[in-house]
Length: 150
Image (cartoon, one colour):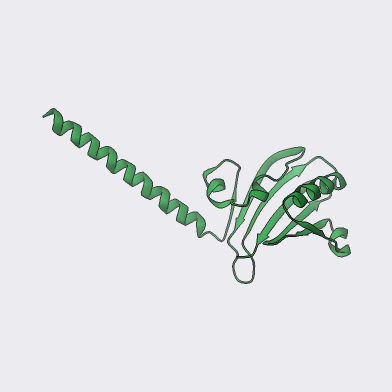
């Protein structure tokens, strides 16, 4: 009788593990098929969707408030992307110099364009894609997006 009870408990535990594994797989597929998704750092969607090491390790300087990560699957002519947005209390010129150094260490080079520089949008080109940094001058918002060729 004791053996039967132990086997029944073991079978129930195996069943629960299988059910939770299937639920995790379904959730992963659900996330991967989202057109656009926003998540917080260290959340399950962050680990599943934000695959770019450039974005995961992006310097977050003088953060005011929350940091939000973005995943885009790339539909139509738009390339897939990963991004990070947050508010910073630092000035735009100091952030541009620090971000430029970081992106150059990741293999990107700055694409100078007077029009983009004038509107506080900075582009960096790399082998697999490009990075776009947009600054909200009055709000302090920093938005960084890496577009990767599929």
